Image (cartoon, rainbow, N blue to C red):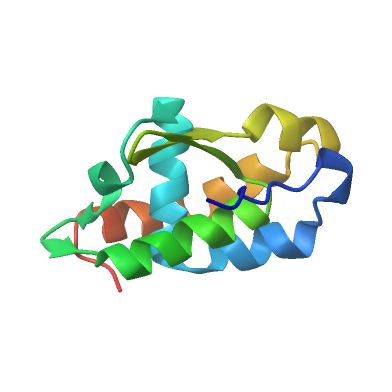
Length: 117
C-alpha cells in the first residue's frame, strides 16, 4: 500500500483550506472530526441526515481534507483513523478555521440535519 500524502504545516495554503471547506459535505465531515478529536472509522461519518454518502465519494472528501492539511489519516488494519490538525493550522493561520467554521455554522448545521443543500 502506498503511503498517504500529508502536507507539512509550512506547505499548507489558505486557498487549499478554503477549497476543502467550500463543499458543505466536507465542512460537515471536518466539523465532526474536529469536535470528536479522532474518528476511528470513515464510515461513521457517512450519514448526513437521511442521506448516506457513498464510500467512493467519502474517500474523495477525505483525500481533499487530508491534502489541504486539515486532517491526518492513519491506517489501522482495514480502517482509517482520522484526526483534526486544527492546532497545527491555528498556529500557522491564527483564527482562519474559527472564522470559516463560524461563517458556515448555520449551513453546516442545516446540512448535518439533512435540511440544507
